[in-house]
Image (tube, rainbow, N blue to C red; front, side, top):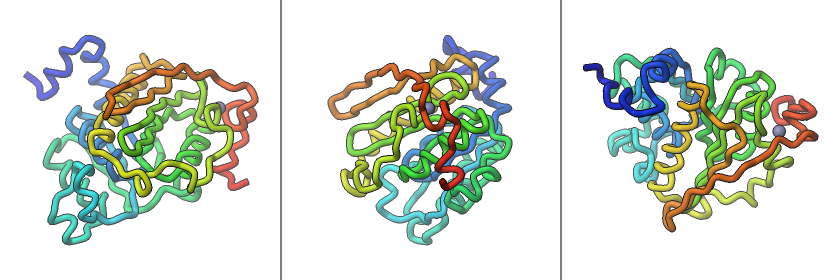
Length: 251
Ligand SMILES: [Zn+2]
């Protein structure tokens, strides 16, 4: 009996998916609500390598939704990625965890993503998401967007060169003050857990090549509702159409 026996038995998962997952490197941008849940699930499922970046320290108001941290981490003000790596090691020693105590920027994104097969969005900065989109589309690396606020969330897999990218949905980056953020609307931990469940499922399906590009998932954990919306590739998209990488190049 292997430690993964229960997930291996699930139809659509199986040995081949486990093999791909166990040899994959996944880069997680952010180690807050989204990033900690992503890392917890992927570590338990037996991902090969997790690279996770965040420049912040753990604080008390993180604990209601950020699953890898405890009160002592908050009291000590530990860097999030340091606390996360320590906890993940106790969950599954076979997973290589590579913590990076920095925010991902235009300057360091290439070095951070490196040889990863996939990027998971776990940031709450809109500008960083557009940067991830530019980088991943330019290099042909799949990534999965997730945004959460209050009881609502959105999950969107981007699988270049097939299917639409984030700028097919939002041609221009909305101003930071217009986007609903946790700081303004609050956030329920259940919203994070549901969004990440859908997001990590998309990540696994990208790895086993059964993801359906162009499926945007909208969720509301309170009502409750999950709706799949079909999104088409926009031929004139500045990013995946014209291949103008404004956020990566700073133009
Ligand atoms: Zn596009």
